[in-house]
Length: 251
Image 1 (cartoon, rainbow, N blue to C red):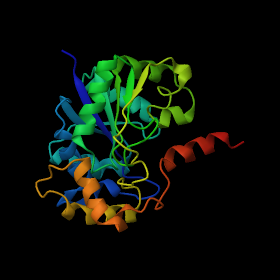
Image 2: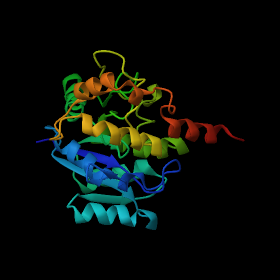
Image 3: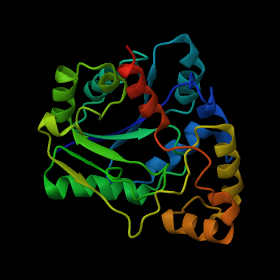
């Protein structure tokens, strides 16, 4: 039977908000809040966190291990190799990639992306190309074989830093599918990349079902009733990738 592993990418040395993954949220560190959300998805067999071997990530690894969350540690800058090592360690045949700045991730969206990849029989499926879901509900799913091809073939620095960049390049030859939302919600920002993002998420939580069993539609209803939390101009989407590509173009 195929084994599906959800890997949450996280580190303490974020340039825009250092230590954000250990900031308190819902009575626990933000990363643990997200792990609990991901564990509500039905299709992954295991949820683990991939972080780096840098000393700065020791507190993150310790917090996760204390909570019983599986952790894999690898190179800081070669995140692609880090994912390949985690996939091998956790014996994954199918990988779900998530980032640790998405504590409000919707388990139903995770399952839908996995199901789409399986139904289409593609190497890669996601919900960001084009993006119609809010920023912060990003999900990617790909096969172990595709990940291994990317690890062996990707050469550019941005391709090593951003795990699926090579997979999503038409020249890679990977087959792909994209999950679209019922409407375009891509202007909504639910990710935590800056301190003010965290303030918004913290303000949003009390407006959602108290048992934590909320989904995208609960979030949309809360934002509709509290439009000040839905400012689409707070920050640009995918700033990290844009900066990485800009560095590559510098002489």
